[in-house]
Image (tube, rainbow, N blue to C red; front, side, top):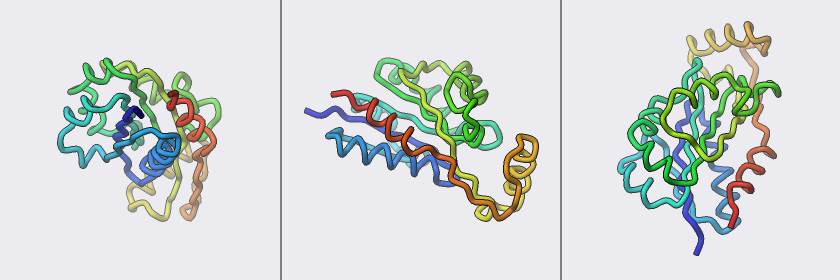
Amino acid sequence: MPSTTCIIYSSVDGQTKKICDRIRIILEDLGESVVMTSATNLNQPQTILHQADKIILASSIRYGKHSKQITTLIESYHGVLNSKISAFISVNLVARKKEKSSFDTNPYVIKFLQSIPWKPTKTAVFAGKLNYPSYKFWDRFLIRLIMKLTKGPTDPNTVIEYTDWSAVENFAKKWYQP
């Protein structure tokens, strides 16, 4: 009988959802049963968390912070999360730099993991997508400023998907161990 993985994600611009969709498809192709939902649409978190054999929480970062919905979920249900095989996935643009693309080198992930009561079994960091044309004025302005400070692209027409899809696929395949 296949195990069930619950994937709960929070995505500001859609890249975290896209990454979670890819993980879901790979897991289902391998025979895993997967329940996937957005943290904003989660009605019965205790039910879905208790019924799952394994849990993946994924969050994008905006202005240095992971999703409040994911953080609240962790604070409320860390006991369940700690009792199961679980993973935390962070999706952020800092991870576009190789030297900041792992859980132990990404400053936002290090700080986040130190601040929460949950200790995930696995942690992954994936670079997100930079899409200036889709951002609202203030987001575009602030993200361009951050990119200028971190030596990233600042052209307001820039659209770059930094996600390493082979790393996403490797994560999913390692996650699924029958």
